[in-house]
Image 1 (tube, rainbow, N blue to C red):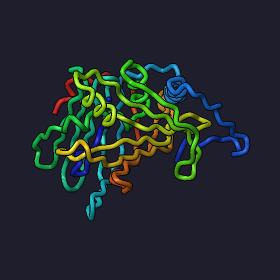
Image 2: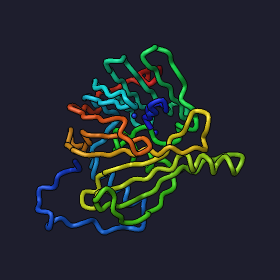
Image 3: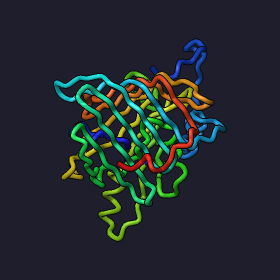
Length: 265
């Protein structure tokens, strides 16, 4: 499933290891990317079955000269939808993404309380970037995704394992299938020791131009165990290399029985 801030702000510390740094041993890289992602998913959720999650905390929104802090509530239902509700001094903002119909749909509402559809070409990346356990499960549980292990590299001064993911769409025209592959491509960067995601990148696009790529980077840190699930309590979103959203979650609740009706605006 990407809870993306609409393009007008278009938009759903790494785990500390107690051993001394010299005692850390990286996981042996594998050329089988799906196996690597399976291990990453196991590091995130282990044997715990998670059907839904609710994250609550504070949010800083940066848009040009605007810089304001408020609250955020993220609600996600596995393989069904993601909803994000913000409350800022400038007003409330909400985003909803759903795959319940079999096709991705999304909409957003700003302070004017008017619902706006999200362009289809901005719906092909997974909306659960705020909760990587669901994002990885979405990739792995579908036979429509392909994976490539790019290799071990350095990112922001940290060694990471890089896996690329994209959607193989069944389309009547080859150029349409190629476009969806490009629109859905997501890069995942894993800590080589814990295998927890430290970053995820993809592209968003103007509402009227699917061909113009605007890079999005999500950074994860401050992982904490909540009911046996590793949750990044600090999530940052960068748009075109500038910080636009800084989320600090204080609470995470899983398997509370979220209704599907939540994912409609």
